[in-house]
Every structure is written in C-alpha cells, then in structure tokens.
Length: 143
Image (cartoon, rainbow, N blue to C red; front, side, top):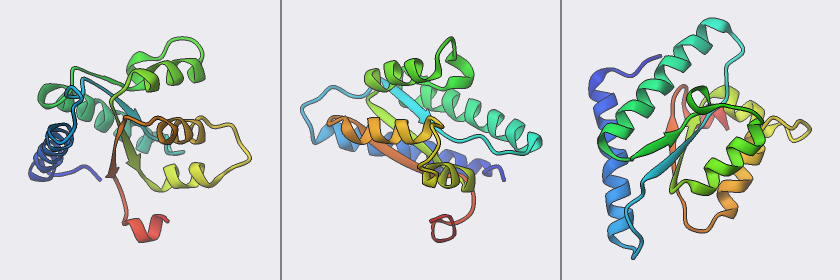
C-alpha cells in the first residue's frame, strides 16, 4: 500500500534529520552515498508497485538528503554480487525496506539470494548508518 503524501514527507524528513543528527555527533563528513536493500515480491502487480515506490524513494532521498543511492533496478549491469559489494563498500547509509518477502528471504539460510549477503556486508562495515523502513505490515507479524 503506498504511503500518503504526509507519511512520505515524514519519511523523507525523518531520514534527513536522522542523517544530520548522526553526522553532527561524529567527526565524519555528511553521508553522500546510499544503498537500498529490498526483496522482490512474487506477484507481478506487487513487483510493479514496489518498483515505482523504490524509484520514487530513491529520487526523493537524492533531492533532500544524499548525492547518489544505489538501487539495482537503476544501476544493474553484470554480476549482481559484484555490483552489490562494490556499491555497499562505497555507501555511507543503507536503507533496508522491510516487507514480508524481505523477512521470508532473509530467514532462508539455504539459498544464495543476495539478501543475506547484503545484511552480512552491512553489519560487518564499521562506519555505516542503517535505516529500516517498514513498507508493509507490522513488525511483530513480520518477525
């Protein structure tokens, strides 16, 4: 379900405020690069809706908070794992888009679906901010 404009503006403002506050307390430069981590839903209609939502999120975050954000539907060329690793290493902040499918794929430890790799890489990197965005449902149900 798409966010209404007030919620969308609150999301953008909250993300910017978080990043500003985080970097005001540190000696690092303000973040300039981000990475969006998500998981595709299985239904085609839901995939199209999510693609539009992610593209809008990327665009709006670049307008108000960051210089560039890696989103594979925009930047994907060649090997997925190589592209993810290179862009995670260059990123200052990662946005995890939380959905039922995200948690389903995250819990599947037997597959090499890319999602587990992203999470491990992010938490292994010392100087990176993480922002969790709940896209659908409620956290108690998803966990």
